[in-house]
Image (tube, rainbow, N blue to C red; front, side, top):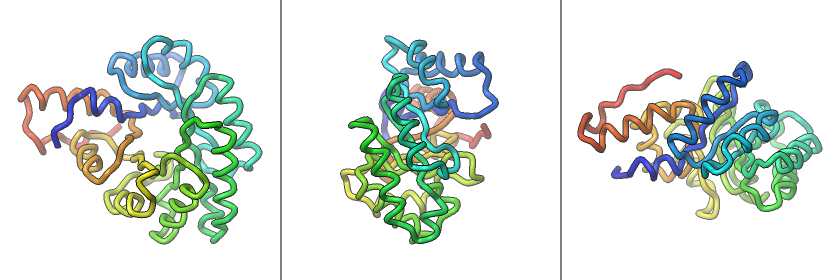
Length: 237
């Protein structure tokens, strides 16, 4: 697929979410995001205001996570996180749906949980994390449909903390389970240019990754003819 570095950068949410990251490490990632002119960083809730002030004028948006990483916090708590996130300057919210409820067949409750977050976001983008590694195909379909019914903007594969991430079969299923009004975000295991391009061809429009530099550097090298297509290695991050 013929895409430019700037086009791919505009589809990346650079993840800065590991609990052990120090402020120095967070700052290094924020500097990377600004240097590569990626679309958005996704930071821990406690880092929102710092990220906003650090990235001011860079053109990089700041997003955060809600109910992360397990999705088991109450709806009231999720709504409170969104309200605080908006106050701190976040403009996108990646929420984890209640996985146990979905697996229990409590789809109406899952939809209501998502809707409360969407309403609290007041028009800011909401991406619903399914955590597909824990779900059957039927549950993935139900989760996608609940997210769309609740007004979410995206359905997303994974947190990256559940031992599984984005797969081609799950992404195909997710894309087929929502209308064109809902976009699909791949997250968890998006570590190479070839993986990203394969998923882009499936209709994925946003990518959560911490391998931003590797992906964009490899695309720049490919554009320069330094490496051929299909030979990017899978690096572990």
